Amino acid sequence: MNEHAIGDPLVVEHVSKVYRQGAAEVNALDDVNLRVRPGELVAIMGASGSGKSTLLHAMAGLIELDAGKVILAGQNLAELSDGPLTRFRRDNLGIVFQAYNLIPSLTAEANIRLPAPKSMNERLDAVVEKLLEQLGMTARRHHKPGALSGGEQQRIAIARALVCDPAILLADEPTGSLDSVSGTQICELLRSLVDDQGRSIVMVTHEAHVAMWADRICVLKDGTNLTELTTDGRRDPQTVAREYQEALGAGVIG
Image (cartoon, rainbow, N blue to C red; front, top):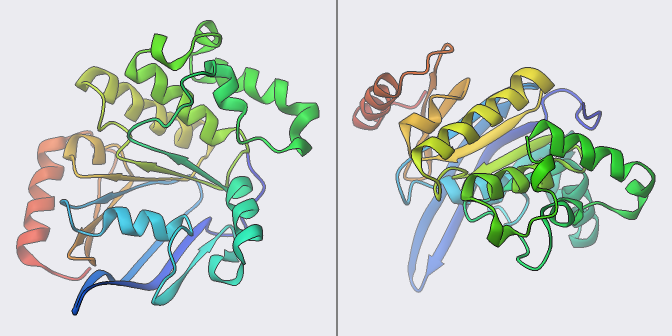
């Protein structure tokens, strides 16, 4: 497992982000707080426009904040200039996208190798081999993305995100482009990365049947934390959906 993180791998403290559209201001994030513990799967749940994507971009150091800070693997991201931030993000953060973002002209294995720095050369073969085995993709390693199913492409995208052994994995609607069977398989895979390898994962979703795989669910509305739901190991989308709707209706800050 990774040795990057000291204490909690991800801390979001009083983060605010305002977007200006002409004379109008939109509070995309308003004093949001979140702490992800080692070996924990946290879901960020909210409707379109709730601030989920903006929060993910903030956690990845992809946007400049108006207030607050994001501490990743013990490092305040705001203290890094562009070059060091890019290198730090490469070494400590893995991102999985809804649309996979694989290079069509490269094989599955070559896509996995893409983010790896030259310093990994001596051990990269072993790392890639292990990831292919763990994600059940060894037999598909020489196939290009166009010859893979959506679920297989997402597995390769997850392997690519893990190749540098990041302190935390961010998954942006990771099942959004998949059918229900493939989506469930990806959720099971993310859950196993936490349970079996002690990975720390933050998953953005608007679906109860995806959020239910998390240990905790942070509910966002209008860029603000409303509350946190705890799944207690249940895999019950109806309960998650009901508690989520109750949180939205109550508008209670948790």
